[in-house]
Image 1 (tube, helix red, strand yellow):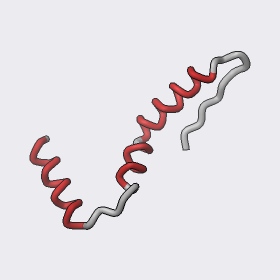
Image 2 (cartoon, one colour):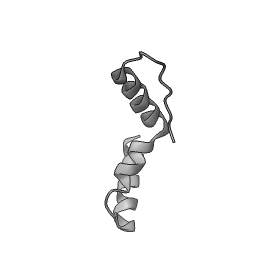
Image 3 (tube, rainbow, N blue to C red):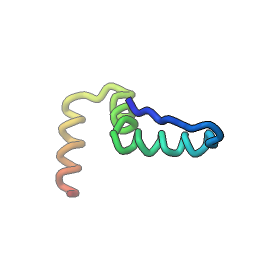
Image 4 (cartoon, helix red, strand yellow):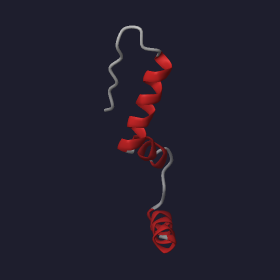
Length: 55
């Protein structure tokens, strides 16, 4: 879990921006979005094959 320590007088917007960067770096949002809806195994294979083809 990403944690952000803010010092007294530090704006909340700055802490929120740092928190979002940490989440993106850890891949938390990507994982949450991927697990948001059930994906059939066949669909998962197709998606991975398509991605491998692009890269």
